[in-house]
Each structure stands twice: as structure tokens, then as C-alpha cells.
Image 1 (cartoon, helix red, strand yellow):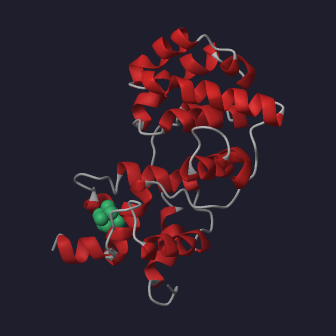
Image 2 (cartoon, protein in one colour; image 1 turned 135 degrees about the vertical axis):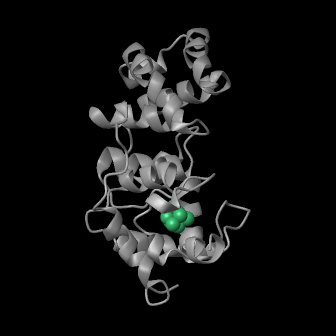
Amino acid sequence: MSAEKFPYLLKAGAELSKHRIAETELPWRKYRTPYRIFLAEMLLVRTRTDIVANHFEKIASKYPTIEALALADESELREVLRPLGLSKRFPYLIKAARYICDNHNGEIPADFESLLKVPGIGKYTATAILIFAYGQKLVPADVNVLRFVSRFTGLEMGHVTKGSRELWNLLPLLSEANVGLSAENLLDFTRLICRARKPKCNACPLSAHCSYFKHVLS
Ligand code: SF4
């Protein structure tokens, strides 16, 4: 997959960096520590961003450190997570916190391989922690970002991993294009503008070169 074949994807990042997409700051972005990023990303697995945002500070103040989370009373944590629809996920949170305390001295790991060994952490969550907690230059390839690249380039989305091999291969291009494009802005854009249902194409700064806009909407 080459930059020549998808020149506008390279420009998309630079264009997006001129637009601030989200109007309000999400709570875990206002005051950022590796633990708060870890907690947010664990809560965001299969849960809408706005729902996590509404409950995040309450959860973070009840469990302000990884040690506090590791020592959480299970039934209490289940109740705390109930408003997020996550009451069944509490064992993962506790297991992950205990694993990090036992194996990493309570420090959230800063490398991909170590993060993947933490119970409940998959590839996307590991990537997001490396980007948002440690500033690593990676592309947060969640389903929204893959859907955007699929629409923009006209490549099939695929089914097995929610993205075809071609889409995954294109992601580094998006990152190369990134002069000042923040991963957060990309996530906000794909969540709020190039959203799953009824994308806001008329308000989209990338519509001039978007395959979906040209071929599907016209
Ligand atoms: Fe997404 Fe529409 Fe923008 Fe294309 S024009 S990137 S489909 S919002």
C-alpha cells in the first residue's frame, strides 16, 4: 500500500489538525496520569465515550491509585460500574490492577508486549495507553478510525478484525501525514463527524477527497 495510491489520506491528517473537533474536554484528558489513562481506556472498552465521561471522575476519586483499585471490594466495584453497564467487567479491572502491582511495582507498563500480558488489555487498549499516557506516535486504530479510512479511501471494511488487511496497512500513512494531528483529534473526528450513522459530511473538512462523499452520497 503506497502513499502514491492514496495521496489524500496523507493530506487528511494535516487538514484535520487545523480543526479542533471536540467542544468539551474529556475528563481523563484534563488531568492526565498513566493510571487515569489506564482506568479510562479499560472503562472505554465496549462503552460509549460520553457514558464513561459522565462517571469517570467519581470512579477515579473512589479508586485514585492502581493500589486502591487492586484492593477494591468486588461487590462495591460492581455497583460503581453498574451505571456504565460494566458490572460484569469488574473482575478484569481488579485482575489488571493486581497484575500491575505484583509485576510492575504499580507502574503502568510503557511497552506494548508488557501491556498485552495484563489481563483484560488487548491490542487497541495497549496502543491507546502508549499514545495517551506515554506520548508514543501510534495510530489509535479503533473501529471508528478504521471506518473513516474505509469510507475515505473506498476500501472494503472487512469483517474478521473489523478492518481488512489493506485498511490496517494504510494506518501508518495516516500517521506519516500527521504534522500536528493529535490522536485525540482523530478519535474525536471519527466519533463525532465521520460517525457510524449519518456522518456529518457537509461539515467535514475532508469531503472534497472522500470516496464515500463522492461516490455514495452523490
Ligand atoms: Fe466521513 Fe463524510 Fe468526511 Fe467522508 S466526507 S470522511 S464519509 S464525514
